[in-house]
Amino acid sequence: MNVEAVKYIIWAADAERCAKFYVDVLGGEVIRQNPHVTELKVCDTIIGIHGGGEGKRTWTGMSFQVPDVVAGAAEIVAAGGELKREPQEEDGEPPHLAMCVDTEGNEIMLTRKR
Image (cartoon, rainbow, N blue to C red; front, side, top):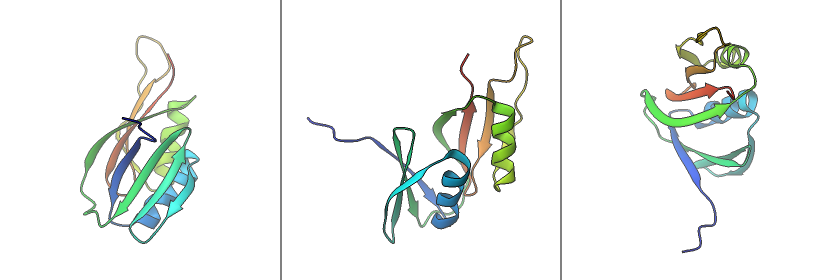
């Protein structure tokens, strides 16, 4: 089998608002858009945002590595997202994890390299 790409699909009640969140906060680039799906590229990963979601809280398994988890979490909140778990120090180290929620209820993680 020749796999051409791996895409991660999330659901959104408001696909346009969701795409804006991933573009504005995580630097995503829209690479394809039609009335049903918007595909974004974040680093080398394709995220497909499918309209028609119910806006229910859903764990995605997506993790975004950032240099500063505290600053990243603040950007998530400023863009209309939420924090499920505030970044916390561990063993005297700066925070390395923040559990976040995008504008559509999709749970994501921010992590820093350790």
